Structures are given as structure tokens and as C-alpha cells.
Length: 65
Length: 389
Image (cartoon, rainbow over the protein chains, first blue to last red):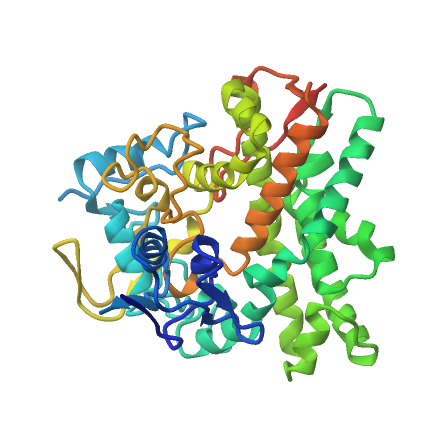
């Protein structure tokens, strides 16, 4: 599985960073999402990726095969 | 569906308004009558409120006379604030500001916020008990934090704090409130001019450097001040009152400070203090939860009942610090989700952990059911919190 981040939809809330700071960060200039680890391993990493997708207020994150 | 009126008054400090709970149980999507006679769709379920808040065809532009929060002075020339705008204008303005509020950037403020909280607690412990914690801690901390973020010189902190407290306090007259607003607006406009001449390492100076005009920056600075001041203060007061009332919860956090993060998130969900930001105008026919909302109709999403939706939060009326449910709507959802949410989280975390560690004998100086809660909104909170130690 791969995390896909759509910066056009991102609202810079930082929810994904709270869920998994190893996978997500924010650009200092515009606050938008930066992917640090796009391919989560099955288990905890994938569970956190799913949670980040769920809590994203801009619907900017998704998981793809 | 009938057209009842609904009350926003809370009668149980630990529950959303009874009318809202009843609506969620009996008619989760319904039309109600406002006091002025206009009708409003009310959404109460988590899924429906989220769907509405993230769909920008539900407009936030209050200049439209059909918008439920439109006021007479919001004519075509009115300059809307961030929460009163739609894309693409909203997107551009939000992106110009939100880099200041990223999780990592705010994290760098933690040691400074810790210092401020420690100094306030030093002063509190040096004085007599009982003391009103709202005055001693809840209102000053967010005011001090935002003033340093904006770049208010230290010498002006007292002026800044006194006026922002007068704006938020219950016992000030409308005249005093008006004067406080005028003082703060004038002060921030002057401060912006100072930053034009002598830029510093602060939010206002960086906005000017990025090309924001001094005329536009004053109102932005004012919004950043008021949006996070009373709201954060209310959450600090409610959280401490709750921990002092529910001792087993207090002990859980004190014995394991690592759960403070979960406690803050759960307290945010549990109280969901701000509701007024969730009113929208439908700009198209849109189906929500199987109900067609027509163009021109107005919608109110009740985040407080959405955050007690049992299909999302099992045992929703339980205050469970291990839940760590980040999908609550206390800061809203969609493109308008609170700009300062991570600053609020940080302040709450530092305040709660520090109060519990440094004042282990802290107790309520009045019975819990005699605490004057802000029962009639617009934001839920506490007017006065007398404590002793």
C-alpha cells in the first residue's frame, strides 16, 4: 500500500502529523503536507496511515495499491 | 418533520444541550425554527456533520443575506474574516497563515509556554487562597502566548492582557467590551506600523515580509488574538474543574503524564465548546444522509452531538483518556478546521500536566454544582473557578 497526498486539497491542519510524525510533516512555508514515508509496512504503520486518512479534514490523503 | 425551536442552553455540565441530544435520538436530520422565524436544517450525526463541513458548496460567506450568520453590517463592501470566506479567497489567505501554526513550528514554543505556565503558577502559589483560576491562569496563558507569537513587546503585555481579558470576561459591561475591542484593534494597527519600521522575528513581521499590506494585517492579527483566547481559556477551566471533580481521572493523568495527550484530546471531544462556526448556506441542491437540502436553505452542524455519536465513539458519554479518538469535531472539519488547533492542544497539555505536578493539593473551593458555567453560549466554558490548595 502507498499513501497518496493531494496538496491541492490539504488544509494544513496537521492532523496527520499528530497521528504519525514519522510518516508526515508540514511545509513551513504553506503548512501543507509533506510525505516522509509513503509506503507503510503492514501492521502499526498501516494502521496509522489509515487513521491519518480518516482524520484528514481536507480529504487530502488516500491509500493506493 | 416538524419545525420545533431548539435551545442551546446546557443544563448538565457534562452533557450537550438536552434539546440537541433529543434531536439526535429522535430526528437526526430535521428542520427547526430559529427565534427570528427562519428555518434551519440541523444535523446531529458525526457522518452528516463531517460531510457538510467538508463540502464547500455549503458556503461560509456571510455577506450573502441568506447565510444564517449574516448580519446587517455585512454589505457588499464588508471585508470578511477568514471564517466568513469561501474558496478560492479563503484557501489563499489560510495558506498564507497556516505555515505559522504547523505542528513542528509550534513544538518549538513548548519550552517558552512551559516557562509562562510556571511563572503564572509561581505567582498563584505566592498569593492567598482561594483564587479564581480563570483570572489567574486560564485567561492569561493564551493571551501571553498569542502576544509573543504576534510579536507584542514585553512592556505592552499588561495592556494587551488586560484588554483581552475585558473582552472575554462575563462581568464587563458592553461599553467596557467595546472599549477593549477598540483598544486592541488600535493597538494591533500601531504594532503593525512598528513592525513595518522595525521588523522582528515574529508572525506579524513575517506576514509583512511576505507582502501582506499593513491594512490587511491588522484585522488578521485581531482575529488570531480573539479566536484562540476565550476558547482556550474555557477549555483550560473546564478541564481542571472536571479533573478536580473526577479525582480518579486526575490521578490517572498525574500517575502517568504520558496520557496527558489522550486526556486533552478526550476533553476536547467531551466538551466541544464552540458551535457557532458550523453554520452554512447551501449553494446547490445537496443530499446529506439521504435528505435533500435545497439551494438557498441553511444548515447547522451540531458538533457537540456529533462528538457523542455512539456509532463513532463507543460509550460516548464516558470520559475515557485512553480512547485517543482524533476524529472528533471539536475544532470543526473541512477547509475551515481551526487554524490554531495545535496551539490550543499544546497549551492545554502543558497547563494540565504542570498544574497536576506542581499543585498536588489543588481542590475546588466551591461544590462542583455551584460552579458558574457559561450555559448560554455562544461558547461553553466557566465564568469563575474558585480553587484552593
